[in-house]
Length: 458
Image: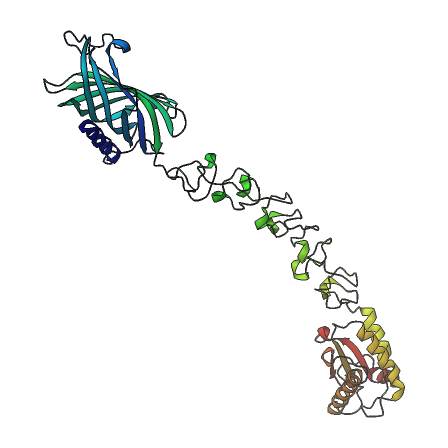
C-alpha cells in the first residue's frame, strides 16, 4: 500500500508539473503513457553485472518489465528543437544482471531537456530522433539515490497530435549505494494545448485570420470567391477576379475593374472610368447629346452648326442665317455695288421746298433702302445730307442736317431699323458733286447719300 502511495505521489507530481516550457509550437504540451523496462546489466560493473552495453538487447535474461502501464510523462516545447520533460515510472525488479532477486519495487521521478535532432533532417518529418540530458531520483525498495541521465529516443508521428515513442536512458547514480542502470520505454504521446479558434486546422499562432475558417495556403485566411486571393487582400471577396484588379472582376473586359467602372457592362475607356465614347470626342456616350458625332463639351458633345454655310460656325457667327465672311464675323460685307444701289434709291428722295419734310412719293424708295440694310444686320450705315450753294452757309448746313435726320428717323421709326445701326450728319454745301453755276448742277448737289459709318471720315 505504501508503494502504491508513492506511485500516486509520483504521478501527481508528473501531471501537476507546469514549470517546464513547450513541447511543440502548435501543441505546446504533450502527455505520454507507456511501459518501461529496467536493465541493471550493461553498466560497466563486475558480475553479476557486465560491461557497458554488453548484451544490451538481452530482454529475456536481463530486462525487468512490468506488464502494465508503468510510465507517465508530461512535456512542453521550449523552442528551436528543445523541449523539457518530466516522467514518473514504476517497475518490479527480479533480475539484477545475471542474478535473481526477490521482487523489489522500483520508482523513479526524472526530468530533463531533449533536443530533436530530427529538425536538422526535416522540420516537419514523421521520424524525429532526439537526445536528452537530465537528472532524477530513483527508489529501489526503500533505498533512494539521485541520478544523472542521458537519453536517446525516437518519436514516430502518427498524426499531428499523436506519436509513438521509444526511448532508452542511462541513469548514473551519484551515491555508492545507488544503482547504475538503463531504463527503456515505449508508449504513446498525445500533444495538446494548441488553440484553433476557428477550427480550420491552423493554430492561432500561425493563423492570420484566427476567428474565420480559412485555407492553409493562405495562412488560415478564407478565399470566399475562390479566385486565389485571400479575402483580407481581396477588394471584392465575394466576386472572383484577377490579382491585377485586387480580386475584383472586369465584366466588360475593358481593363477597368467593376467597382471603378461607371459602365461595368459596356466596354469603355480608362480615361472615362470605363464608359464608352463612340465618336471619340472625349465625352462619354451617356453624357453626349450626339454620341455618334464628335463635338465639344461646351456644346454637350454635339458639333456646332453653320446654318448659312459661310464657313463661320453659328457660335461665332453674328449673322448665323445669312452667309457672310470670316473677316466680318460671319456677316455679309457691304460692297461698292450695294452702296451704289442704296444711293440710286436715295436720289429719288424728295423734300418739301426749303423743308426737311419727306414727300410721300419717296416712301417706296426709303422702304427699299431699309430692305437692303436689313440684309447687313451688323453694318452701321451713315446718312449724309447735302445742299447747293444758294443761300447762306449756316442755313444750308442746318437744312442738310435736318434732312439727313428725317431720313434716319423714317428708317428707324417706320421701317424698324435698329437706331444704333444708322447715323446721320449734314454737310451743307461743303461737298458738291457738280457745279453750282448751272441749275442741273445745283440739282445734283441737293441730295441725300448713304455710306458706311466706318468710312465716314474718309
